[in-house]
Length: 96
Image 1: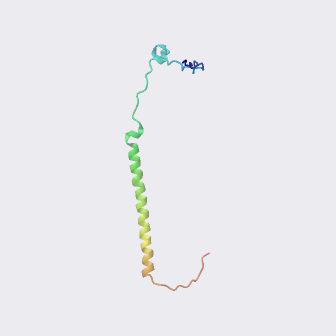
Image 2: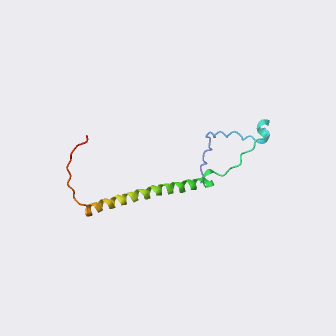
Image 3: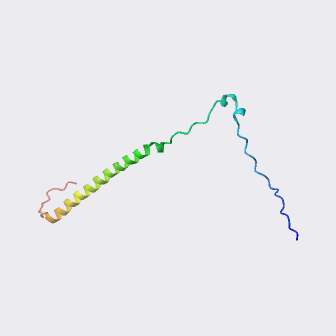
């Protein structure tokens, strides 16, 4: 039995990227430059943790004040409903 050979690939090849210049090929004014050293990112310095902690405490303060105000006013309202006395009033003037 004979096997058919696959046709050779004749497609165009992608262009090769330009070569990376080496120290020997750099102009003299750029030959002394060195790659920068990586520094610690801002997120890892603790600033983010401090910000979120302060933001959480600030938000919690408003939550506690809001809930406290609601409970105080609700308590006063229900106390007036239970213990309040009806009053008779006469309207003498309308301030429009």
